[in-house]
Image (tube, rainbow, N blue to C red; front, top):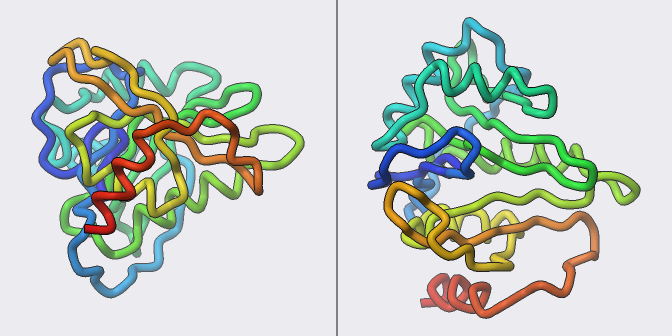
Length: 201
């Protein structure tokens, strides 16, 4: 799977680190044997492998300084997915009062379709609760259908179109959301049907 700004083979201009992006998750291709990963806090020595995944996932990759600037913020969390001693994926997200917001999400190209991305999403979902944070949100480029389909399979729904969201290209974004438990909200719109129709074809 891709990253939340990146994913697949994105064609995007330079973006600010705080704009949501997901890598291309290669949705629709045959799943390979599932790889069990350990998901833990990101530490400084992970940065070379994180940067390698970043650079192979996005055309306009974050720099090390972009990552560090983001992670210095008190509400910003970095986690990595580790298989053996190798970092095969990462995610950066923000903590808000009632939600988590994904800023960056990527799996190394060699480890996509092994279930790594799904395990990373499951880790985020495990942090939700009915009495505190009940949602996970992220922005996905309108052209990044692979990421849209991947998150749709993880029970995220597109709830809004953000017009001209990406400064590099003027491209629109879909705001996607996962809601904890049975609360699916009342903000669904036609973007959900568009993704579902594609998946059924």
